[in-house]
Amino acid sequence: VSSDGLLSVEAARDRVFAAVAGPTPSEVVHLGDALGRVAATAVRSPIDLPPWDNSAMDGYAVRAADVADATDDRPVRLDVVGEVRAGQAPTFEVRRGTAVRIATGAPVPPGADAVVPVELTTPLDPSGRAAGPRGRDATGPLPAGCLVHASVAPGGSIRPAGSDLTVGATILEPGIVLTPATIGLAAGVGVDRLDVHRRPIVGILATGDEVRAPGGDLGPAGIPDANGPGLVAMVAAAGGDPRVLGIAADRLEDVTARICAGLVEGADALIVSGGVSVGPYDVVRAGFETYGTVDLWRVAVQPGKPFAFGTARAPGDDGSDPRRHPTLLFGLPGNPVSTFVTFELFVRPVLRRLGGHRDDDLFRPTDRATLLDPVSKSHGRRGFVRVRVDRDATGTPIRDARGSVQARLAGGAGGQGSHVLSALAVADALAVIPEADDALAAGSDVTIWWLDRA
Ligand code: AMP
Ligand code: MG
Image 1 (spheres, rainbow, N blue to C red):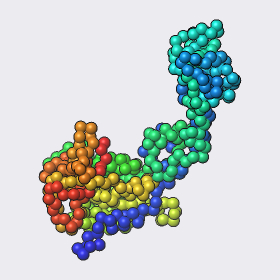
Image 2 (cartoon, helix red, strand yellow; image 1 turned 60 degrees about the vertical axis):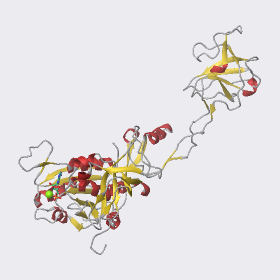
Image 3 (cartoon, protein in one colour; image 1 turned 90 degrees about the vertical axis):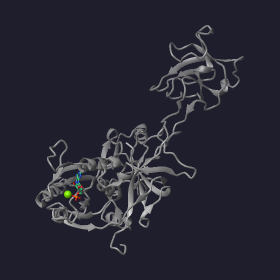
Image 4 (tube, rainbow, N blue to C red; image 1 turned 90 degrees about the horizontal axis):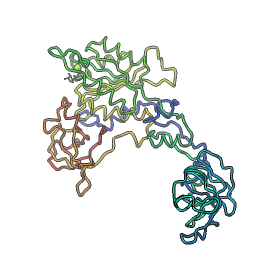
C-alpha cells in the first residue's frame, strides 16, 4: 500500500490469488470436446508409434543387398511374390531375388529391409517383358516381376516402429492446452478420452436501473447492457463456463437474489459489473456481504476504480466439506472500458489459474512498443491505455530497428474515456503507463499487453 492508501496492481493481484484454492477438479471429455481444454493429468502413449515398421512409399519391399548393384543401365530383376496393402498383415516373406509390392503405411514383410519406390521400377509380365511403363502407379494387377533401376540403402523408405514415439512416452503434461495438434497426437496413439480441468463456472451479473437487455426499449434514460454480454465473452475466451445472472436493478433485494442464484449454481467465481461505488444506490457490496466478506479496494490503476473483491459460500454451505471452495466475488466498475480492463488485470489470470493453466500461462504476452501519441493520466496510478499497432499487409506488427512495435491510441485522442467502447473494440493491446509518469511524450517506450485478435 502506497503513502496515499492505494494498493499497487501487484499487491491487489497477490491478494486475489491468495484466495484461490487451486485449479478446478478434473473431468473426462471425448477428444471431440477437448479443443481449448487444459490437461489435468499426464498422458503416456500406450503404443509404439508407428506400431510396426511400415513403408513410407508405394513400391516394392526388397532385400537391399539384392539391388545393391542396380543402375539405370543394369537394372536388377526380382520376382514379385505377393502384395501387402495398408491395413493388411503381411503373408509373404521376401527371400533372395524376390520382392513384395507394398503400399504406403503397410507393414514391411519379414525378410525385407528396404522399400524401392515404384518410380524406380518397371513392372514385368511372366515372360519377362515390360508389362507397363517405368514408374507407373503401383496399382492394377500384380506384375510377375519387376526391374529395379537404382540401389536403395538398408532401411530406405521404411518408417521404423517407435520412430515417432515409444510406448510410455509422455504425450501430454498437466497444464497443456489442447490444440488441434495435441488432439491429433492423442488420437494418433489411440487415446480417445482425456482428463481435463472442469471449466470454471462464472456467474455474470450486470447492475443498474438504467441498464437494459439487448433489444429492450431504452426509454428516455436507458442504455443497452454492454457488460453482461461482454463479460460472458471474456469469460468464455478465458476458458470459463459463463452463467448469465441477468441485469439487477439498483435494489439490494434484486442484487442479493441474483448473487444467491449464482452461489447456488456452484459458481467458482461471480462477476458483478457496476454498483460498487459508494453512491446511495450502489448496493453490490451489501449484496456480497449477505453471503460472505468483501473489501472495496482502491487500486492504483486507471481505469479500474472502484474494485471489490471477496469470497462467499452458498446458503447452507457451512464450509465443512474441504472439497467445496468458497466462491470468489469480483465487483467491477460499471463503465464498460473499466470493466474490461479490471477483468484483464484481476479476473482473467485467476480464471486461468482455476482452469489449470500453468504459472507461465496466466498472463497476456507482453512486448515493447513505441507509443506514437502523447498521453496523460492521473498521478500515481498505473495507466492501461488502449492502443492499435501498425501492421503490414500480412497483418504482422511492424517493428523498428530496435524491435519495438509502433502503437497509436485506439480511437485517437478522444478514445481513452472509460465509456468509449468504440476505441476498445479496435484495440490490439493495452499499453502500460507507469505510476510515476503523469504524461508521456509522443515516441516514448512502453510495455504493451497483447489482447486476443479474434
Ligand atoms: P456504476 O459503476 O454503476 O456507477 O456505472 C458507471 C457507468 O457505467 C454508468 O455510466 C453506467 O450507466 C455504466 N454502466 C454500468 N453498467 C453498464 C452495463 N452493463 N453496460 C453499459 N454501461 C454500463
Ligand atoms: Mg450503476
